[in-house]
Image (cartoon, rainbow, N blue to C red; front, top):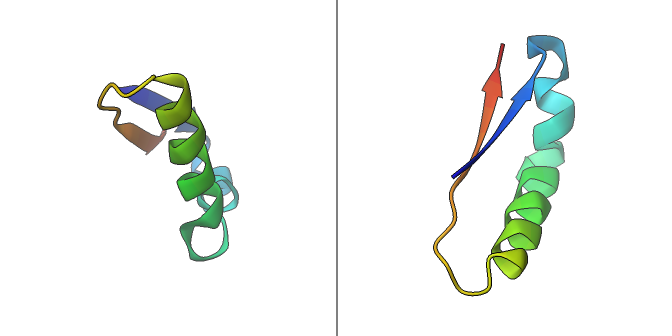
Length: 45
């Protein structure tokens, strides 16, 4: 599991419009995981 911690004011920016940025991040991490199951969470501090 990868947890991305962001300031609450920046959470929307990290997730992106329609979740596009978060989806791209998940795709990138999945490609690097080489077939392993991956979970990406965006947490605000």
